[in-house]
Length: 196
Image (cartoon, rainbow, N blue to C red):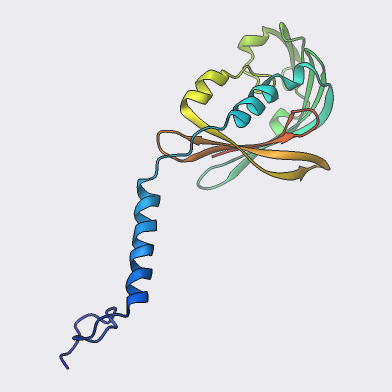
């Protein structure tokens, strides 16, 4: 029997692989080819509808909570913690707890005018809500989202004791997961958000 040059080829020369091994190999190659060539998933109408409802949910629901944002870079993580009081449909009070240089910052808004107190300067600034660059209450163009992302409803779960569903957004162009939202089953409020 001739000597093998590649250790990975364990089938002796002159002997064919059994039929079931050939079928298994063919199935694995077919599945791999399909997964590489598959186009990203299409949006579900239920996912798009839930996203649209979640964008408008804070207009109907008052709440108090803590928002923690963590941004990871290659060498560190930066976090911002704010306490949020929202009186539907348009009253906001946002108090910064962290980072240390923002501690005590207070933002009060009626979604027309925003007042921001900067404790380091002991000054109050007034701005239009639309130019205040707050991520809370931002309007989201759901039509543009539906054009560029597949929106799917995932499994049921729980966040802070609230029953919720996971909503995923995957790029229709690259197939990459770009965002996950955990949406409250009762109020449609976004309880948690991960952006990738």
